[in-house]
Image (cartoon, rainbow, N blue to C red; front, side, top):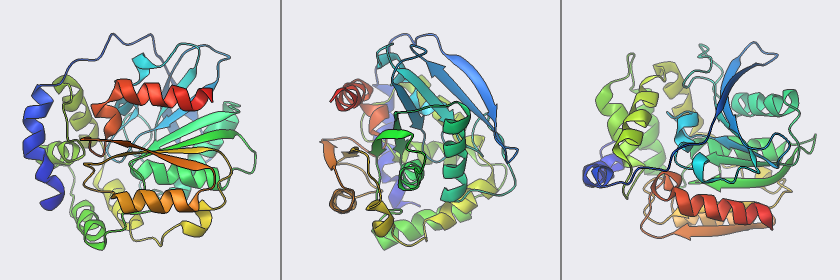
Length: 291
């Protein structure tokens, strides 16, 4: 895990230098119980009949991952930030943490809430879930797909994949503060507001060891290149060129295999680019949805 956390030391001073986000708009908090018995927590903001955006967080996070982005999205959009199973205030079942499990939850959430023409955005490991939803969108509820810090199912670099998998497999309950802090810090390169960073550390501490274990094992799955070609909706891929987990080659592979896709690169930005540059990310996301 050490090499994956090299950014943590340099990030610590950057975190302290980060600027606070603007005041957040009014968020409504809600729960939805799925047919499989799992209850998911989500927050929602914006016009009740506005264009729909659904945001999926990365491993160890929750809806709070989008705290810096939400206040920067126009109120005309109906924005849902979902906490996936095994995270935050959603249910934490003993098993069921494959991409298919997560994707099934999201597909049913879209159905239960009757969300249509959805822009679905996923970060990091949950970008793979967003891909899976898009690949199997038989009900045609999606209109656009947004992938942040993504790849074709796992990092192409085998040592990164192995190291991350081993780190997740070694986690025991209760999750240690040092791991949660260093893991979250390793995903950033530039400044992050300190209060927000501590929130994300707290969210990582809520994730149980069995969840981390299954997430790590999922990294050994074969590449999803053939499935990526099934994605029919316009797709925007975001990548920070200081990302230590997913490389430019990972991004090029996505663009080569997803029809109607394009890449936006953020210079001097890490894996969690929506944490580091929420204002630019929100602006780019809105521009994508408007065209």
